[in-house]
Image 1 (spheres, one colour):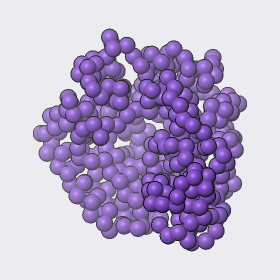
Image 2 (cartoon, rainbow, N blue to C red):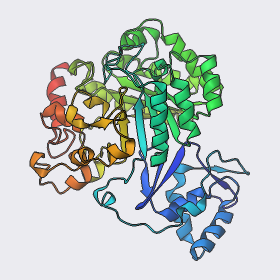
Image 3 (cartoon, helix red, strand yellow):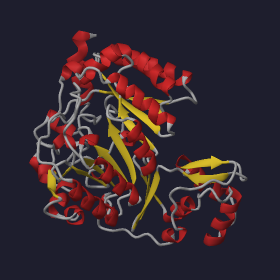
Image 4 (cartoon, helix red, strand yellow):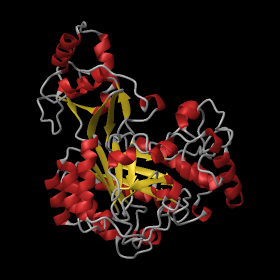
Length: 460
């Protein structure tokens, strides 16, 4: 870090003030982190108007500390949320630094690793979709229920902002098929929340890109599963959409909107992944994430969509080679071959009802889209209660803090229970009838690795 450079908070970063600390999240890069208020204060100063030397002086004056390596340590820790500029730059989302001058306190929720109010939400506008992807985890296609109308979604967004939600993911189905899509999108950005759209891209044209620019979207996520039209059609099971998606990527990149691609890898498109990587790089895609297919209670596809062990190993070698080739051009990420957590530091904690909420097309607030057919994992409906009422309800409390009587071993007596809370409920239901049973990724059971090896051994 050069002291004559101007640190600028990224457009995709948002900060939520909480009694027990502050939550900072990058829309596209991570799942967020709880930081101390004085660290949030430091981020709030990153407006692109002050050099690092200026900020050190301000910081040391406010907190009565010497300009030392300690301040450098803070900015090093927060570096992933900052862009460093060599001249004065404009910040699109500013915070009042005084907001973060307060003493933290432990609350009943924070003592249980839960936010007092949600920091992010995912809204599934519709289950309607013009694709029929072979791997779809919520089996989108035709609408399953009566969906919320535009005014009802606008009320949800109003309540979300009042609750202090700072990040909103808009998904589907194909979210652009909802008649109020753009009104809903404008309401989210006008509220100050960052917004992340997940779309198949086939409906994006010049007019859509123009509206995205007017709304101020920094990025969009597309689903693209192949580098050739033939294989793309096999994955989407709808012919003729590939050219539309490619053209949409070109339009967005040309308009200065970052494009993030997520691809699901199966035996159907495995052989085309090298082409896909090269194509995304040539198109100017910001990031490509290669994800493997996973089973879902509510989804399409079965074990026939698992890659073989050899395919996964070969894919990992390809990705590592491509990462080196693409250094500085495109971010490339892929799921690792290891399917189970390696230990305590590797545990993936579900954020549902702890830091986030998921709202289904009919207004149900559920732990997860993958649990749409599990009533006990639904906490209420926005037509009947406010977001705040549902967040603070006994039903949510019972979901996130279940009685140990319904928790299966080895989780019930595990030393990590207060951290992982038995892991992913949806994955647990794939190997048990109890959502509070062991997550198949847990190293104490090693079920994911065992199941995968058993189910694919003959195909290697």
